[in-house]
Image (cartoon, rainbow, N blue to C red; front, side, top):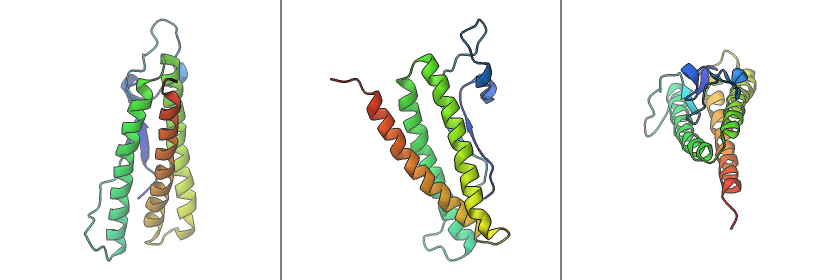
Amino acid sequence: MRPHRYLASGCAAAGLALGSLSPAAGATAVTSAPVIHESFTLLRCPSKPRTTLQIEGCAEHRVVALDRTIDSLNARVFAKLSRSGRAAFIRANTAWVSYRNGACAAQASIYSGGSIQPVADANCLVSIDGSHVSELKTMLTALEPAG
């Protein structure tokens, strides 16, 4: 796996040009929650992985499964936010994906050039994604009306 993950949303052309988002006329409405898109092609994950490539494939499958959970939680959080809250949420998610990818690339770089590097990268993504799921659940709880 290489650092080639990105976040998309329903913003104009999914370009995440949120810096230009403003209440002025012609501003793009933020209408859908951010979605993580992994640009790698999933490797096979056999029931008993034996090779580094198979282990990498299984880690990739865990990443994609966690991405789906994050996407679902993002949609639930997004639905509870105001227009300005949605724009801030998308900016935060874009920054989070950038952090996740950079941190994992840095961590896996100790294996630079080795066959275990992509496995270390994917395992790091699984770990950070898992923590983010917990964060999003906490945020969702905080957004529930008191009462």
